[in-house]
Amino acid sequence: MKFSPLLSDLIKSLQVLPGVGPKTAKRMAMSLLGGDEADAKNLANNLSRAIDLIGKCQNCRVLSEDQICSICNDSSRDNTQVCVVENTSQVVQIEELGGFKGIYFVLGGYLSPIEGKGPNEIGLSELNSKALSGEIKELILAFNSSLEGEATAQYILEKCSSDSLNITKLAQGVPLGGDLNYVDSNTLRHAFDSRQKLL
Amino acid sequence: MKTRNSLAFLLHARDYSETSVIASFLTKDFGILNALLKGAKRKGSKFANILSPGSELYISYSDKNALKTIFECEINKQIPIVPKNLKILIYLNELILKIFEKEHDIPVVFKDYDELMSLMTLDNKDEILELSLRNFEYRLITDLGYGFDLTKNDVGSSIEPDQDYLFSPLRGIYSLDKGEIESSFKGQHLLDFMSGKFSNNMTKKVIKSIFRESLEAILGKELNARKYFNQ
Ligand SMILES: [Zn+2]
Image (cartoon, rainbow over all chains, first blue to last red; front, side, top):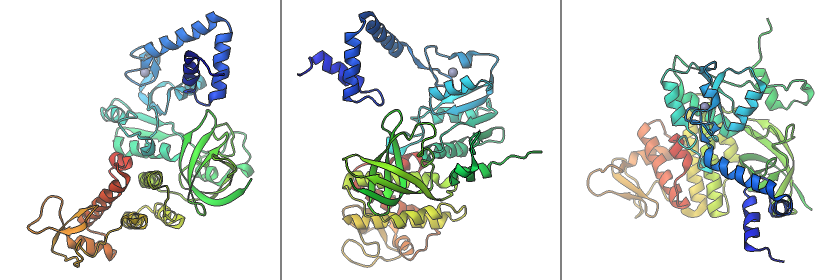
């Protein structure tokens, strides 16, 4: 049986979600239309409102419906310490840990020539002018250790370095509770390089 | 189902689903391979740390389906790349993948890539690295069938050190009759490059721009890494 045009449009558009193929999309569509109409309407409204109203914080590029997000607006936070991350969900992750009192800068991706993501696409010129303005004392790079993540860190290091700015990156090493016998040589090498003084 | 094994380098990985990625490898025995790494983004995945740059991997995959699946992927050897050379690696990977996309074949030998990687571990060998990168490009252009002679001009006369020349991807090197113009260069630079002399900055610039034009003519587009990193 062929689906009606509206139904096949819906199934097709659900497939923009990561990990959703035609079969899952069909199941989702059936469940939305076969269940409580109010629930489905609610989902549609929230989605539409979120798309209309959520943008990027003008200061840190985190997803937010305010022009300046709640973190940047919080006067108790130290805006001379900036943690640079790939995306908003990492901001949420670090916020859940608690303890970090600085602010963030969200790139929206790493430098990736193959994917057409250059310095301008990921806000590096914006970050560069912030770094050079002298208002930041420390940039903490919280990046993946992929080629793209590491190359982005190196790019920032080369472009933003100045005497008044500390650029740091997260330590890499043996996982907590990890057994050294099972740590791969790559991780072990990083752990060795970033060993800490005990006394 | 057939299982294949090979040494490989990861060129690029992109998200396939919330937990899996599709990776492009340069393999020692089977050329370029695009394959699925199931669950690579899950916590504690056995594929978790293969994405770091400079890992020579030992992979096993099945080619039962059109989309090949990796079952084993271990780090065979770690090549400690100097951070300032990461942009060269990123350029190299883009070049290889875009050539493969266009030509559906890549005459690049794993060994050449491996050798370039080894040079990237040295902090003070920029000149040798750049020369090797240019030789890599020249070999690639030639092996793809777009080669041109750097010792002769388009009508077969030997390159003269003091003569002014121009390059076009279609004609190769050709002589400029009167005087020099902005994009022209002396024959000396070509002769120096061919004899492995690569210390003059003008020679570096001339050779880079010739191969760049040639590669972009083959690809029909600009390479992004060049734009981003001025590589
Ligand atoms: Zn903000």
